[in-house]
Image 1 (cartoon, helix red, strand yellow):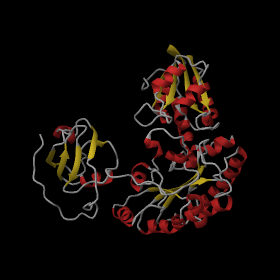
Image 2 (image 1 turned 60 degrees about the vertical axis):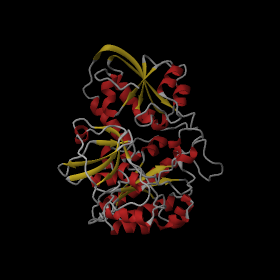
Image 3 (image 1 turned 45 degrees about the horizontal axis):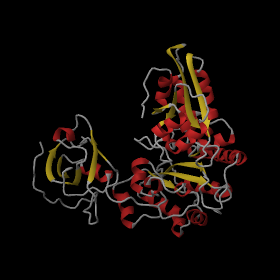
Image 4 (image 1 turned 30 degrees about the horizontal axis):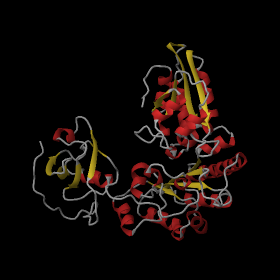
Length: 466
């Protein structure tokens, strides 16, 4: 049971200072089985107010605070009663608590007005979370989301240095000050190289991205940006670890007269040739290609993806750089020892974005050689976003309803989980699984990841069904 204790103030902790502004209690979402938290009696709905007299602002503070061997925790239970608890544990042992949110104060939102911002290219009237312009360095550290650095305050820079929040993921777009200010529509945006120099002095590493907008930050400006960032990759100290080159994505909801142009196949080919030439130069001088093109460039251009080895250690896979190549590699490995026949005949549909359709045809053809298995691969455009060539993760419920109308779907439809909001059955247009199932008159199964796809489709493993 909980041991009630009296609070005592600890000396100032440089890593987690005393906070004067409002911090919400950290609400617990779930408790891990056989954990300290379960043994003590924590329950979902309880909230942590403070640990050793300090209020955690977020998961980062929480992890630092629970690294002590003796913890004095103030807890607000779901009945709104406060308990003071003392815990003694090994220093490196976690409590087994999962929180509802990663941030216990307010999220830091973006103060830029980038014309290519995807948040501004959405229709109105959807769930509120879709319109949050995250520009929070803590989420960058925790989850790899990209930030611009334009809204950081002095205390934020201090915290990054003190807590060594590294690596961070930075949207650079251009190192040229005038170009970056133009892209972000922010006069504070032009000091990006000074900010990266600060990271270097404070031993903070970053991954960078450049969203290429034709006739704005491409060509010579793109080349200049890559080489200026490469100066921060040195033998003895690597500050900029990698650069992702991403094509601008435009939807039918974007503001009028935004000055942006879409990426054509011819333009994609030109950019690929330019960046691959730069990669060759950097490989010789730095021992790494340093910058990589997002998979979309090759898919738009109709060019085969580079080999798996060229992505080195896959530093930007979560940003769509090499993710399809890795996906295909896993699928290929899992399909090396396929059965000649499956016990129970199966005819199903596998749904992906039209942009990746061609790349998956060889795998599906290989699977369809199995006696008793028939997979229909459908690569859908997005009527919702107004994009013909769309990645799988942007397909909406409306796209499935429209794209699968009058199609032979077999016994069931299989979709990857990246189409849905994490841990929910909601598509990006707020339609849920049940709504779409009714419209397409078929059951929808959700495939969690590439490791499960082969086994699920040939019947060796059950997929999750929402």
